[in-house]
Length: 635
Image (cartoon, rainbow, N blue to C red):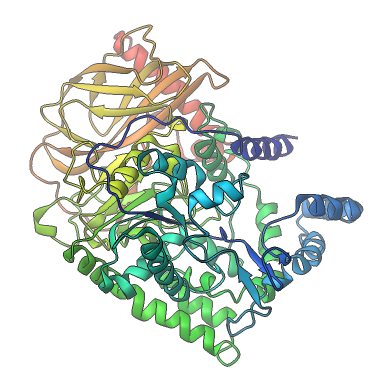
């Protein structure tokens, strides 16, 4: 029953995400550019059709839900039998039923083993005049053919819809092919707008296409500003997990993903803490191999393969003769284009362009890859940065790989080394930002708009309000903590208090307690405080700040809310900057914050509580009681 409730809850949240409108606050400051903006969208955003014309052709991408429901009811008995078998570990029956339905559904999208399309497909409009927002709004008021409508509408508040264009491409093809079409579209937009340059905003797969475009065509100097948010520049780990049937689905991560997307101020992820549904893994890992002949030869999926896993996947899934053309194209991306991305992007900046990357981090990939990511794309692939495996951090005293002129490039929680990034001075990392959620986080939304529409911010040092490393301010995180007088994520010896901000859009927050792991600090939380959305609370603390640097403390804020989630918490990592650097140690250490509850547990009981999914809940309540009792000098 509990499993059933978890699934229903997740589905309800996913459905509700379609109706959520982000609360926008803050505005772009600086002189607004008069260059047109091209939106380079994420994966599968283009409408593809089969036939002689767009008007009469057969749409081949996008689910027809009436048809899906019809097929579900037609095979309801078989699906019921399959679900029954699935719960006892037999995924073959239901995966066969699903494959029999999905393969014909996606048949027209099939590519041959060499990567060419099995059918002659066409994309929607390709000329700037047809993809301009004014034209699309007038002719397709339902939003069809427009990309990223929420942000597009806000960009229009500054430059008007007449200056916004929507790029589309056959997303099945590789990044090099798509980049060539983007170059054609840039020329079309320049001609239609009468401007000599354009601005590019790209997301996800669009980021990989844009980076490839800049690498291959940046010498033309047609771009003023290019902003890539959560870009798949170096691939997407989820593609590897799916194609190689290596899925270990992380349901908790999925629920947090949905919470972030809906900007939910109720936290549900604890419900699935103890329900890592292995039967879902069995289903997906049994189903995906059956779909490989239909979807597995898309060039874009092979460009999505992370560099360190590309050869193994190629050996497993591609015939060197039948897929020779596909291998040649993808090899060129992996071994010629991608390795030179940093050099090519740097050349673009030297030629006067502003090139920026905004990446999410701090999350595991939902399909199970144990690497730092935004839930879909590894942080390394998005940015080129060196990252500790998910759940760990670099050991104390870690020294960044490249000097970067003496600039610190290590994240406050010591999980990311940005010195190896494609653009070390032009990449922003937002911890807790999930994939595709730029508009759901006011910090990233305003930063992205500012980078796109002005020349005011040229690197991560241009504006102290937009540091290189930042914790997400999405409402689903409830609170944000920062030490007064310190940079974001840093604790110096001069700090005397902690500021907690309510980042919710609607809910009031009451801070119950604050606990520090790594330093003996006692926080004097005022009783009966109540923070309205956007309010801050300054909390003084006492105790000794360790006189060392290059190590991490974790600060956890416990709170109550006036909604269905009565108690919650958020943990943030802070780098100490208060003396000599800790002696360098090799390898990685756990990034998990210890609490007073850990001090009373023994190994077997700890493992038992984790298995039940109760460790986090009991730790939260015990730590709140411990902090309150300590403040009253009971302990």
